Length: 113
Image 1 (cartoon, rainbow, N blue to C red):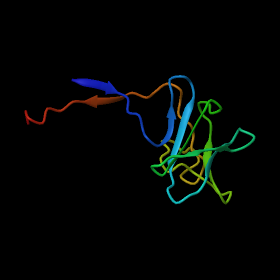
Image 2: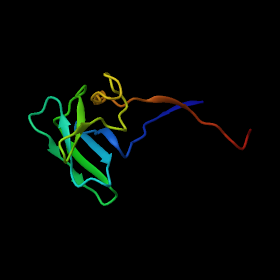
Image 3: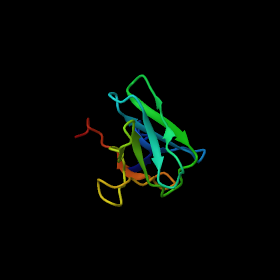
Image 4: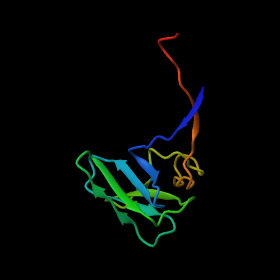
């Protein structure tokens, strides 16, 4: 029997039900990380979490927004957890579409095998 499910990722770009997007990146050796949206006038500072992640939630990201993470030295790097990079791995990732993707999922009964 086929089923569908949605899996929330703890890193990368996560679309939220209220229309915002949460961005998280694991960078435990960094002192500061910011979110640089290509169509925004300035980078958005991210909050450092105790786990080594940096996080920011914004409603400035739209479906199709391209972004990078900006390090404290000004370097802008792609999201290592991005799900779509239309310009290849060195280019900016693209925010996902607004509706969550539902992938087919089949339940397997391992006891019956």
